[in-house]
Length: 313
Image (cartoon, rainbow, N blue to C red; front, side, top):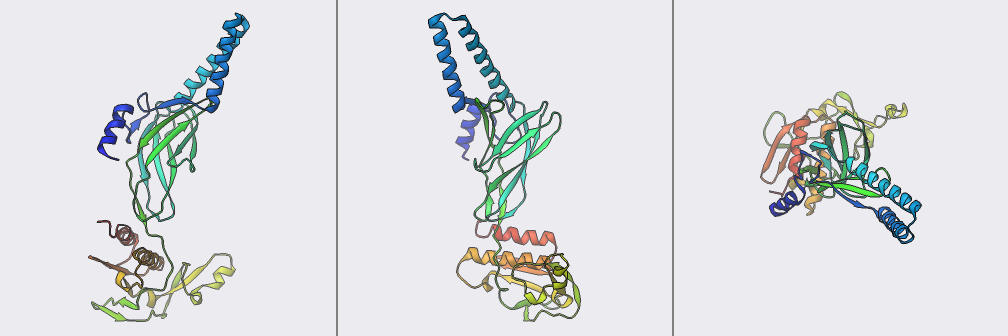
């Protein structure tokens, strides 16, 4: 969002970035379709009561009018005073939904039927109890890898009668990391990195000593599936061996066939995840970037981040 837009929204509606407290300057309220019909009927009843000087008509009109005003105040109060403390999101793979977790405080009374969404098609409905801080998870769908901005967060309530809708439009100022979508493909090239010398040498994964079982990944050889575990209802697992785990794999984008950069990155992503599940040491070489062979979650996340941001400066 541009600086001019931020200035405009702050001038018109107060602060719009987290952390903030919802109040008079950033909550808006208007009648719904049913509310407009309700107000029209009440207005017609008032006109008829005046025309015929009907006291019972005045009584019913003022009763319905006060009911509508009370409903409007209750709808507004569902949002008023809520404090949004922070917004966080974990990295996901392209095509998955990001779960944006929002920490909410200032719940001094029960609040019912509040909807949170970035896209109206994916709302999250939450009810809050008095005096208990809460965390709201709101989904935003991703398409491409890179840094993902979920956009404006909408917080909406039409409780209790649906005659009025109160809403706030918040810029959570959050960018989530989106990894390439893994694509199963043969291991690029036939090169592994020797643990005892620099450079590449051609090696065939060994099968000397059984190391253990790893969760099955699409593309694993059927010959390595541990069928006995599957027959016992433990799910699909593959056998790993000390010879295989003892060699470091070097993944190089230049070794992946094809001209589609996005597909190349997706294939590298698949083999990074596979090597991590097999507890196999691996390195990554991209244009201008080299990650030496290592293992562990930190190394995996560092390599996946490089894939996500590849070509984005």
